[in-house]
Length: 101
Image (tube, helix red, strand yellow):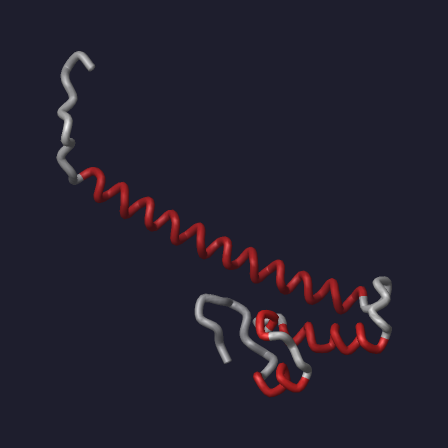
């Protein structure tokens, strides 16, 4: 399954996420990494020094998704600014500029 606007594909299926009881807000393109992380956390009784590799890989995936969304938003803002600038150039000012102002 492909997610619109993202370069990362969805690897985990809905059935896998339901079976692993992944909360709905966490069902994104990194859910396939969250499932083994949560299994490791349960097996190791949530000790903070355990499952470091799985946690690092999951957090890196989430970071890359956030950075990708930020770049997309920046492109949208630049396009809107360019569109607004082109509309502004074609308008007639309400108060004309005088020669001495």
